[in-house]
Length: 197
Image 1 (cartoon, rainbow, N blue to C red):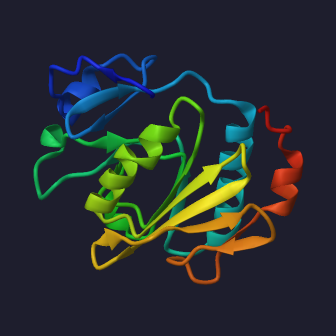
Image 2: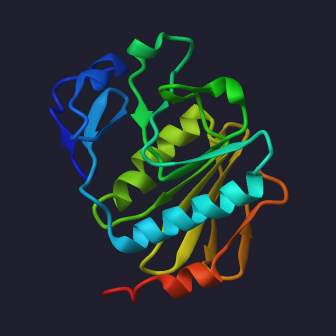
Image 3: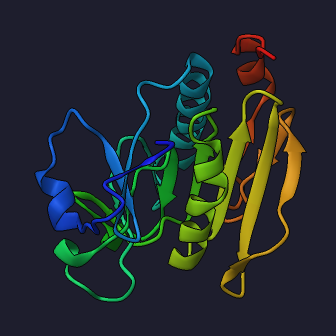
């Protein structure tokens, strides 16, 4: 996902739906970003384990967790789906409003989401997607840094992400917008391959 495709042209969700399934893209403000090939194994371990923990914790509750690939359409107002110019696929997300979920995925801001950073996507996730999630109203945005075993947490306050909190991937980290739900790190981190420096 590290580079934009066809920068001179702007796209919408209507264009996005016509692209071949084997080529995965995200749209941010009408700009198409080709998603990287299969991520490193630590990315998959982290995303899968976070999803598993969420699915167990939220079982029987109104909030629903999802794991990529799921299209999240982020309209600016009440435009039709076909006119939306931002469509993302966060690694893991939670939606607590069932009205936002349809057969195509999610329309509107998830309540919580996480991106697991990869070398090819780190800058994009930390800059462009952070701005996009803030504008859309994602209440809490987590960035997991596998290499240095840290977590960056952005919380939406008065429509903006304030100064992030930084945590080590150890013990438990509570999810602020999901009372009583936390992610346990120790067993997860023990399964990860040693970082390469």
